[in-house]
Amino acid sequence: MRRLRPSGAGPLAWCGILLATTLALYLFQQVLWLVLPFLFGLIAYYFLAYPMQRLMFAGLSQESAANITVGVFALLLVGAFAFMLPRFAAQAVGVQETGMRYLQGGLLLLDQTLRALEQQSRFMRDAHVADAVSSYIAVAGEGFAQNRLPSLMMSVAAWLPSMLLAPFLAYFFLRDGRRFQRFLARAVPNAYFERTLHLLYEVDRTTRAYFQGLVKLTVLDAVCLAAGLWVIGLSSPLTLGIITAVLAWIPFVGSVIGCALVVMVAATDFPGSPSIAYASIGLFILVRLLDDFIFMPLTIGRSLRMHPLITVLMIFVGGAVAGVAGLLLVLPVLGVIMVVGETLSIVASDPRLRARHAHARRLRWQAVTRDL
Amino acid sequence: MPYRTESDVRLFGRHDAHEAPHPLRQIKLFSTLSRREMPVVQALRHERSYLAGEVVFDEGDDGEAIYAIVSGEVEILRHDGGRQQRLAVLAAGEVFGELALLDQAPRAAQARATADCVLVVFFRADFMNLLETHPKIASKIALSLARHLGSRLRQANAGQRQDGHL
Image (cartoon, rainbow over all chains, first blue to last red):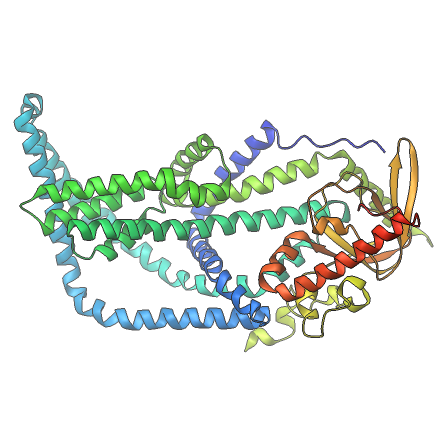
């Protein structure tokens, strides 16, 4: 028997992987109301998979372990909601006022900084940069409030019910994930079975590692930022740390929004001392650097095993094709399609596997036509 | 609760008609498992049907899974130059491809069905996961596997069988 070994995924397969990722992102943007609950359901699934495994380790069946895990998680969520609701309701009236106060604080800091720069630079003074920026922000803010904000609020309100799907999906992923895997495996011909099942395990491993890495990264980011903001002396450092760490799930844009948020709070809490706001920016840059060079390679980077050039390029492509949703989804989608594409190209290009499948089909045809 | 009705769970639920549980106890590797432990292993199995003459795996394939024969017969063949050498014929209850459970080495021989057969398949990834979630069950299987490999080694030393490297 002469065995021709497949050479692995070639440039054509890689073009297909990148094209499929771009197409998937475009399609996902069209059904974002389903994709986001699915994504949060997956995150909850991988977050809850470990406690469920501990229960199975204690001797419970998969079904009982899933019921208890999701039950306790749901109780905790309801408890947290019940605890937060009265506080939120009490402050709801003041939310808009507080938001406007922080926005004004941020704008004031920007104005002060630009005017200080104008005093240093004749070119900026001649160009009236501070006045130009202030009037631009005023016009843009008014336009946003009148044209974009109502539609944005409406779309967020329309999405909220679909987010209830997330815990529901997580429960069924936990309870029936293995059955679904076996259900898919039954559709695979014998010749490709072992290799393809290995693919399913790899997809599971990649997505598990990615989402578990994401949760670890968020916790590390939140702790570092909260500790730093507490040292600087900002109010609500933990809340700010958590919000900015979650915003960082969106590559580039999320970090900028998070930084702006922290600076606005710093400028409002300490209106007379811009050095606090600058210290917050410094802290943010420090945590970003820690994130990019230490935390990310230790958590998410290890899971995807992707070339940095492809990662950065695809983040830009994701943003161009599907906006903020594309930025958020591009890495997990690319990770899964990469594993599927690589393995499919290896399986499809293996002449021995194709020959074995053709042989098995001949045998089956002979078996069913023997007595005709 | 509507989910409990039989028709609702037909897709891949507990009424899994295509995968009616075969008694795994008849397979030597799982014979030491208790009645309570058996469903855990049942949940990990994949069941495949092969026709006589069909190749289960090839020499040189990446080994990802261990196979156990529920019914039928499987022969183990090695290609030595242009010559095909039959190393063993395995019957119901026996396992093959067992080294895949331990390492990722390529298959050392070809496995081919000599009669129509039903095989149950366990993947290494599932076994590794079992080590984490149910170490007692996994260690029982590992002990059975070690005994099985020991007996193969003794047989190979005695010159009775030559299929010690699957």
